[in-house]
Image (cartoon, rainbow, N blue to C red; front, side, top):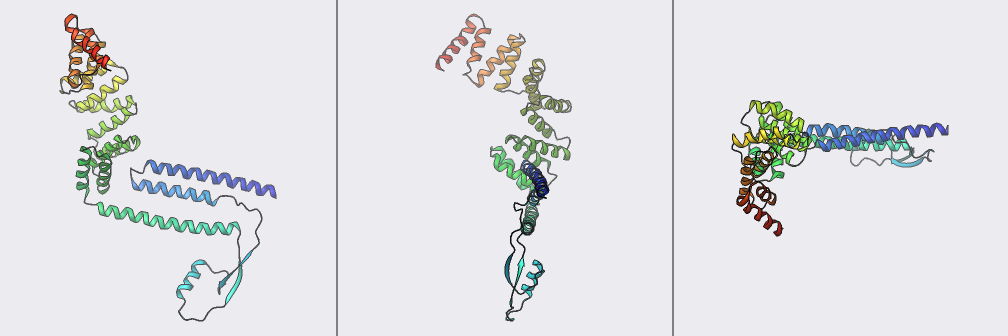
Length: 348
C-alpha cells in the first residue's frame, strides 16, 4: 500500500511539473506578443493561468497521514451548509435578533480540504482579474476610437525627431483605435525594427500588407528586417519583384545591393549600386566608398578614382582612401594623397 501511495505521488509530481512547464512557456509567449495585440496576450495569459493552476492543483500532498481533526466554534449553523448559503444568511439576518447559541462541530483539516479552499480563492482572484482586464481593454478602446488620426500625427512628429519610444506608443494607439489604419501599422512596425524587435516587426508588416498588398514600404521594411537578420536570400526574394513593379524605388535598390555585397556577389551588387547612383542621383559616403571598391576590384580604375575622391568630399580623414589614391595615381598626381596618408597616419 505504501508503494502504491509513493507511485501515485510520483505520477502527480511529474504531471504537475509538466503543467508548470507548459504554463511558463505560454507566459514567455505572452511576453513576445505583448506589443502586437492585446487579444493575443489575453488568450495566452488565460492558457498560461489554466496550466499553472493545473500544476498547482495536481501537486502531490506532502502529508501521508491524516492529521487529527480539529474543532472550530461557529455561530449556530448547519455543518453541511455551503459558504454561499452562510453568506446569504448573514446578509438576511435582521438587526436586533436574538443571539444564536454557539454550536461546535468538527471541520476537516486534510490536505484535500485545504486544496479545495485554495482552489476557490485562486479561481475568485482570476475571475476578478479577468473582469478588470477585459474592462480596461474595452475602456481604453472606447477612449481611443475616433482619435486615430491625432495619434498618428503625433507619432509621425515623434518619429521624425528620433523620439522612438513616444512614437511607439502613439503609433500603437492609432492602429488600435482603427484596425485598418495601414499607415499607423507601418510606422509601428518601423519603430519595432529600430528597437530590434524583429519578430514583432515582421508580424506588423504582414498585417499592413494584408490590408494593402501594394504597400511597397511595408515590403521594403520586411526585407530590411530579413537583411538585418542576415537572411539575405529571403530579403532578395522580396526585393526583386518589388523592383520589377517599382523601377525607380532607389532605397530598395540600395538594400538589394547591400544584400549582394554581403553575399560577396560583386557583379550583382555593382549593378544595383550603379543604377541608384546614376539613375536615381543617390549620393552618400558609404555608396561612393563601395562603388569605388567594386570598380577597383574589377580593374575599372578611372571610375574607382572618381568615387574615392568623392568619398573625401564627405570625410577628409579616411587614411585608406588617401593611401589607395596615392597608389592609383602616378607621379605628381599621387604625391598629394601619399603625403596626406602619411600625415593622417602619424597624427593617429
